Amino acid sequence: ALKLKAGDKNCLVARSKCYLKLGDTKNSLKDAEASLQSDKTFSKGLYQKAETLYTMGDFEFALVFFHRGSRLRPELESFRLGIEKSQEAIVNCIGSPSTIKLENRDDLCFISRQAESNKANQKLQLKLAKDQRCAWRRKCMRNPKTDRQLLGELYDDKAYLEKLLKDKDLMESSTKEGIKVSELVLGGISYLDARGDFWQQQKPIYARLKERKLRKQKWMRDKKQKPADIGRYIVKSMEDINMLLTGDAPEESCKKAERVLKTVQGWSDSEVPNKNELIGNLYSCIGNAQLEMGRLQAALQSHKMDLECARQSDLPDAVSRALDNMGRVYARMGKFQQAIDTWEEKIPMAKSSLEKTWLFHEIGQCYMELNKAEEAENYGQKSLKSADEEGDVEWQLHATVLVAQAQVKLRSYQSAILNFEKALEKAKLIHDEAAQKAII
Image (cartoon, rainbow, N blue to C red):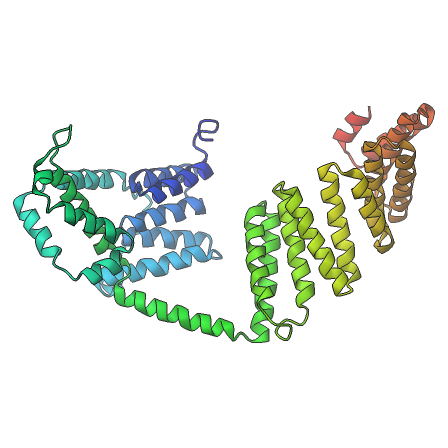
């Protein structure tokens, strides 16, 4: 993507995230800074730079950029959380933040400093002196239980490297490049010790135990949610799901809806009186997101679940919605007869002339795809009549074009010409240049 559009800030941030996942903080920071070159107020770039600095252990500078992003985008919780964790890490390292004075300057640059730091680390790993080995021996005496808690899964790697140190013959050997194996092993252990120190600074063990306790308390509170809290959760979740879908993020919308669906299914009917209706709504949201992602079979299944919930609860509006969405999916799948059958079932439920206009037009288009021009013309006329009742010029244009296309198929060329001329007038009326060109 960057080869096609060099310097694209969104791509740079995405690559920076990948580098950070791989532990390559130098390149991660480089890409994050590059994303800010053309726009220093780019919130994603600021956040990524702050996250990279935080991972590198530069908590003070990370705090600066979290604050900068928070001032620009105060509605984003990620910046607020970044500020909190940076402040906590600083306190864990050196004590009260009241003794720290941060300068917020625009020309902050860390690349060269980090490059020098990396070179120093490499020299340290490859040229461990006797006094450093002694220091490691002193350090390795700390409680293994503490090490395991700090390093997590990496503790097994450290234990393996320590075991290798006992093999004297292996330690005396060298690699093809001439580097002693003992230096590499000690370098690896030194790196793991540094990571342990970093995690101890960022979140000491006592803080982890406290956090675990708080998480458990929160979980217990969530299990005893009051109806008002449940209501707020549902409203906020539905808003987020719809916002993600309209914001061109169907995958995130789908995942969010699936998580909420699982939560709602775990509640009792007394906690959520309209539980079945809500579940149907969530299936509808999931189906719409799956349709946007091109997962047509999954979308159809989700809308069928919505229809089932609606019929069980006797909800006519929800039934109409589910039939509408199922028809769209069938049409996208090329199953035009199933789409027609589904939409024709919905016709009696249509409440407005505008809804009927769209419905008749789509059914007519499906008949055109099936080469049934007579039925297509019939539904085109119905769509035009409803559009006239509504006074919607744009839909009058679409319906008139459909009628004309059907008449061409029926070899009623004179009628088709008259309708195309009417459609052209309506296209000029609403200044639709693309429609004018297509008609001409």
